[in-house]
Image (cartoon, rainbow, N blue to C red; front, side, top):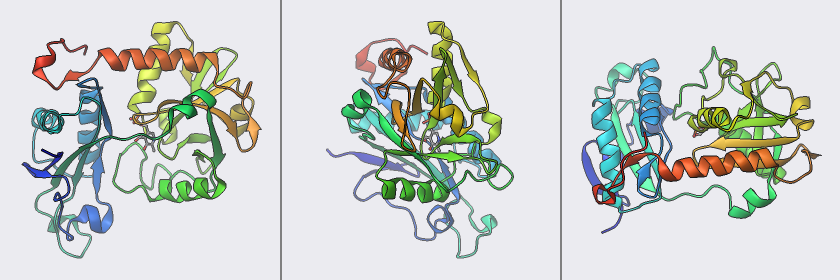
Length: 300
Ligand SMILES: Cc1ncc(COP(=O)(O)O)c(C=O)c1O
């Protein structure tokens, strides 16, 4: 049997899974989503992702028509039915079906979709050789316009930035705040290492508070590596000894060039490698088990 998607309480073959053309997620990007990974039959940081999904929806006043526990179970069940041990999971909750006006009051019930598939962002060579970044002219949307902490289905500024990355032939794009501070990448958070200290832009600057970012901050503590949130300018990035980006799909992606400037030695750095290894070890042993038969207790 092929992979099935969860659509409003039903499991449908993924090729047939669909929502209405009147869904405001489709018409206006009015919705929220998550990107989650399963490793070896365990879903990594599931509670954190479900919490972020519900918090994003709460701010947009989208009432998800199920409890956090039911959402968690629906995600686990969708993965279980896929038979996949390593998977990428995409829960999406949109405002739901309405009419052709933007008024959310015309959408009586949010739509809930869960897609499970496989995904790879960068080839393994990128982890060995490192990624090239360019700074995009598209800035982060200001906090008082649409807070980037809300993981909404409206990714157009990131996509505008991604178009610039593609034009430049780079791997990822670095986005700045309207004041010129380093914020994050188009689909990842950013870290630099300088004089043995691991630094990342503060959450209050207006970035997505990545779950991988938080995992890295926690891992640094375990590893005894100094890590902190810090305001960064492009100069700090160019002058860094090491640089890496973090995200559910990318995990930790070493960065070796930004805007034509070589970072550090021009090769993925030792601290990046150390944290990446610790991250992969953690992801391999922790998480919500999907298959009861695995018999391995949850690590969280
Ligand atoms: C804009 C943006 N920043 C950062 C991240 C990384 O977040 P996480 O580690 O929770 O996947 C993502 C991932 O979806 C993203 O889209």
